[in-house]
Length: 230
Ligand code: ZN
Image (tube, rainbow, N blue to C red):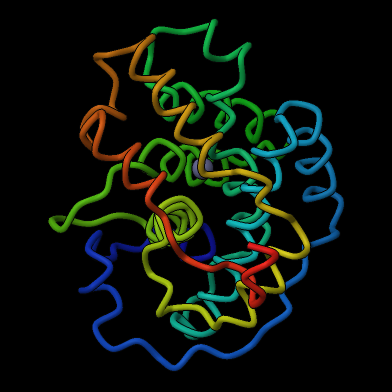
């Protein structure tokens, strides 16, 4: 089950990584197995390019962070890839119109159904779905799957600029050159506002309807080495 991330780890990143290893410069790459190729094709068809590139950056960060900070985990990188690529599927215009549910909950249902149909593997489908549903369930109490924790770290790193101590500057530069940000924080801040306007009861509001958007817009991390590029 640990290949799917069904391992209890603290939700609090400080407790999950009490003493971070010195991160190493890495050049993480996308997987190219048949299942991952199908996931990439589906995500490319469904997601706007900015969201697709964010999802690809998140995967590459997670891969590098797992290698540096969780070297003993045997979480499957294909499961990680599928999870990262589908984590924001609930934010597309079509899926926003299709539901009154919180985007990450509805996205978790879509991801579960898609992975189930494609893989016929319930553990795989539920691992992805659970992590997608909880990817904005940030906090310092209780537990989460290892897959869910990694997705939380990767998304918050790309959106708010937290947890940069877990990844090497060169890795950040490499990933952000490969899949450029192109105004990502403004785009995501808009998605937060849209979610809170259309579904004010939703889970995104738990992060503070204005606080979370403001944190995203205040992200001052330099993801590229050259200030001219960032
Ligand atoms: Zn995201």
